[in-house]
Length: 219
Image (cartoon, rainbow, N blue to C red; front, side, top):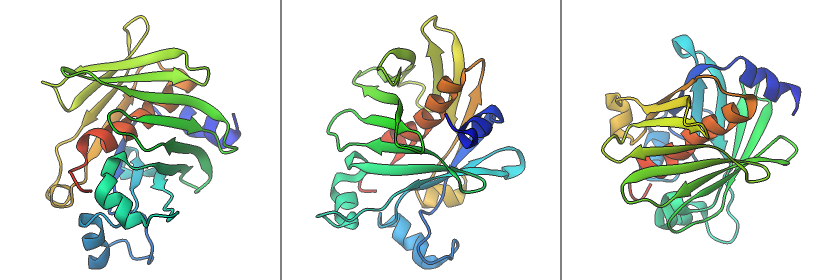
């Protein structure tokens, strides 16, 4: 694993993932046009990783690809189930991770890669009518940790290792008025006694939860 990746996660223990109005295309983060593109589902996803006092630690940005079907059409009809490619950068905009999510119907799969596109881990969503279930697996697909959170507690997601010890906690925060109006959210993440591999997977799992569980229909 390269130095930017090690440095980023070694300094990370408690942080938030804040959804923005989307990847900038015009250089104007606060414009009304971006507001309406976001609410209409036309912008690619973007999240800030922030520490104390909202210090910017990194960004997670969707790579907007047109392919054969225009982005807005895929977003409108496939929504969160569409295929996605994302890049995670540190505060110096150095790439530390790439994420790939193939198109899916019932349950999602997210592939975590380093900056050379070598597979590091997988995050699998599993179907369960009574629980939110996710498996965090190594590059060899060995089970490392999991989430089994009852649907009666829809905003709290403890991450447990194979000994059922909590190694991380992901919680959705109550949205501000601006977040509520634009369907955005903030998730808080805390590491307990997590290894580097586990830290990488927990951060990506928080992003996966945001996409899988908290996007309104049609976004």
